[in-house]
Image (cartoon, rainbow, N blue to C red):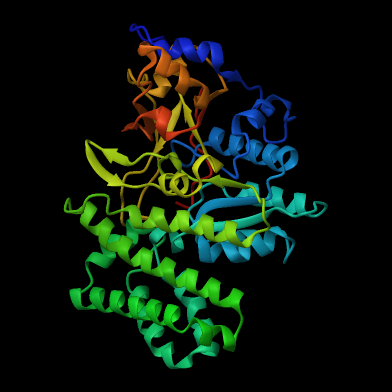
Length: 432
């Protein structure tokens, strides 16, 4: 890719400070990743992003980083952009429950966002590891596609703990089943076609259940145990946040959304990370895998409109420098655009779209102008230098999201950027 005709001071900085990496192969030796140890420092949560789902290079690099952080830095949890409720049986599988072949059934209903191989590696690793690597789902159920993965186990819990409330949750499940889909791209439009009375009834039931759960916690715990209560409550909270997200997404698609109204999903994901962190052993360190737009520490805006406050912003607010965000991007190749198509299983198709030359001002343009291959840049080192050198301020002001750009001060949004010289859309997406 030819360099930009404009002088790019940040490209000059990258030439001097970015660290070249050698391998993308997840099974390759890990020595080239050793600089990452110093880059992340003492962070408890290291988030690894991606500028697009369904990219082979990003998936392979995430697997390598997971291996490095587990094998050499003592990380013991993989948290993933995957349903909190659905993640509980995956954690059991990763620790040895069932057979190797069971994973396909566990993931059959999920969008294939690169979870299969990390889980298989974890299961193999855990056969001999002590302590084992745990898996933690953090998202609302079915990526916002259905309340049922959360409500069905809540109903099972209430059947034993509080059978008087079972009719209410069963009514909620009946309504939820009428618009359930594989993702929010299917469910939100279907939810919008419900009668307003049904929409409001669902929200009212969920809120009444949530308030009852919180109000009678001592009673529920006395009839069961604290762990079962905590899990059931978090599942119910996921259903409530998903229900809110249906309204927010329907309004967004209709061009009527409130400012930052899609934040309900991200604050739930952040809360789930903290929920898990509180229940693991003190000092537990977590690898967190999610899209760049979820892990960044600055608000998400498109075309000047504030769309959402991402998970990373909430986690940075709660944890400060113990949260570390690594954005993944690429300078050439293809990205996976996802045009909406409600008639498909997940509400979208995946199109391999050739990446154009990076826009001036983007982090991708800086890497291209620096003529860097596979490499990682510690943006912490750029911040003090930017203050001392006016030509570095404010640094790159955008980063790719699929084939578009998300305008954000990159030095504030991410702590490091890992750049792949190319990107390839996965070729195993026939189930979409």
